[in-house]
Length: 350
Image 1 (cartoon, one colour):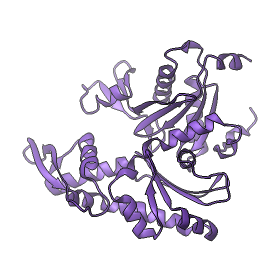
Image 2 (cartoon, rainbow, N blue to C red):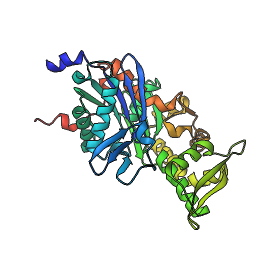
Image 3 (cartoon, one colour):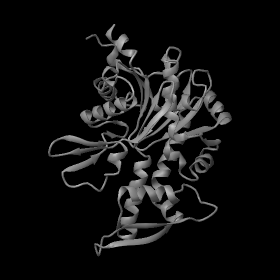
Image 4 (tube, rainbow, N blue to C red):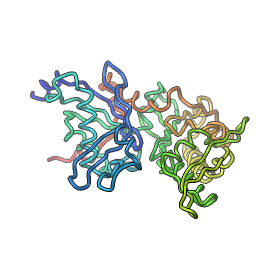
């Protein structure tokens, strides 16, 4: 009864709780928050200094006692207390113009496919401790498929590849469920690490994570480009210890990313090989849909298309596909209840 009363003061929200970024959808308003999943903590006092965009600006620029960290690793909770504080921050921000002290929203949260019951429980408990009165979990590829308006509840095969910051989810969906799925830890962060390693091995140059990401966005590609591209690579010379700048081109970065891209394409092919023939026929007709920030890597859709012999397209606004899906579920949760992730701990009597 109390929860129902508090619901009048609350705005139901959908959350794409990503390794790199967290997006929040508010029912009736759309996407209202898109901030990095970063929390800055004072190690001496254990107090949280900043969350989100403000904390991201501190990465690599903090004094010894302040550390800017990500509370999620590969899409799952690695630091329960910090994740809880981050969710509290986002829920408070959504309810800033209301009586936020009474806010008890219903929350739909996207989680990677294939996570364990313990990891599901960690996300649910963190959200409830942050103030949610009801928590629904949905696997991210399912949420992304709903977000790009694929017919997930029909007897039609749809294939979606969600390339995020920490993980890539590959899934074939039909009749409201995931038929075949693969989850691998090759995504945006791994590509950044590849560039850092390449700069160290090839040029004896130490790069920061943000610099590597900027280079990936500026000239990164998975397939040969029609027009060559160049960008400056700035870091610390490992031999002299002094600042150094070199110019790299798209072929250099493609070479740095080659192995990870190969593993990603191989996983997509392996998923297709495990898919029932009738669904493969649907996918050949409808194509593979790419979502997530990693899908914006130049030429990735072309390379996957060449390797799988199936049409591939990047969805419109791929960065928000998952959170849009959670929003659609919020708007009509009764008819979409079957797509929610099952949790075994719900069935255990307490």
